[in-house]
Image 1: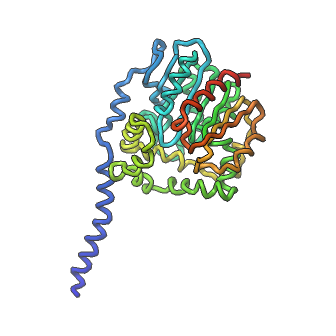
Image 2: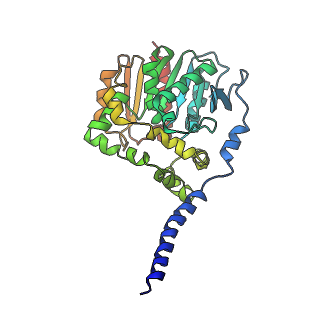
Image 3: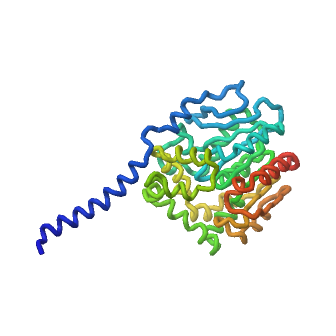
Length: 333
C-alpha cells in the first residue's frame, strides 16, 4: 500500500466531510435579506395608523409590529409569540379582538425583528425580553393592557405579569404554565426533565443552526408543515437570514435553568386574573406539573385543556380566541 496516497485520500475525505455540510448551510442562507427588505419598506407606526404592519422604534431597536383597532376607545391588548414563530401567528386574534372594540398590538420580539437583533447570548436573558414588552407598551401608549403569550411568549408574559402587575388587566398563558413551576420541573421533575431534554440540544453552538437552515430549511419545513402557507412562508423567510436563527436560539442559550431554580427568582405569586389553555397531546409539558401552578395564582383563575398539541391557537383557533376574548371581558378586576 502506498501510504502517501492513502493519507491524501483520507485528507480529501475529511475535507469533503467539512466542505459538504458547510456548503449545504451557507447555500441555504438568504444573503439577499428579503425579509429585512420587506420590513424596511413598511411605514413607521404613527398616531393616525389603526391596522396593519409597521415599524416601531423603541429605544435602540426597531420592531415589526402588527396592530389592529387602534382607532377604538376600548381596552388594550399585547400578544407575545413563541418559538420559532412570529407575530403573524396572532393574525386571527388581532382581527377579532379589534372587531370587539380592543386596541391590539403583536410584535416580532427581540431576535425575530431584524432591527432588534443584538449580538451576544446575554442580550436574550428574560429580563431584557420583559423590558421590551414594557417599552413597546409605553411607545404605543398602553398604560394598562390585557396580555397573551404562547410558548416562549408565555414565559416572557409570566414574568411581565409578576413584575408589572399594576399594568396588566388580565393574563392568558398558552401551553407554558407558571414559570416558577415550569423551571423547577425542568430541573427536578423526571418526566418534565425528559420532555425538556431538547433545551440542551438547542443550547449547543452551531449544530442547531445547521439543523434548521441546511438543505434549504428542509427540517424546519417538515417540522412546521401544519402551519398556514403564509405563516410558514414568513417563518422561513425570517429564519433564513444570516444571524436570525442564532438570535432566535439565543433565547434558549440564555436560559440557565439551574441558576434560575437556585435563586427562585420566578417563584412569585401572580395577582392578575389568569387563563391557562393547554393541549392534552402536548409533548413539551408534563401534565402532572400543571395543577401546581394554582398555588402561585392569587386571583381568579381558569384552566382549559384541549384535545390538541402544543400549538393550540394554530389547531383550535376558534375555541382559543373565543376563550381569550371572554377572559378579557370577564376577568378584569
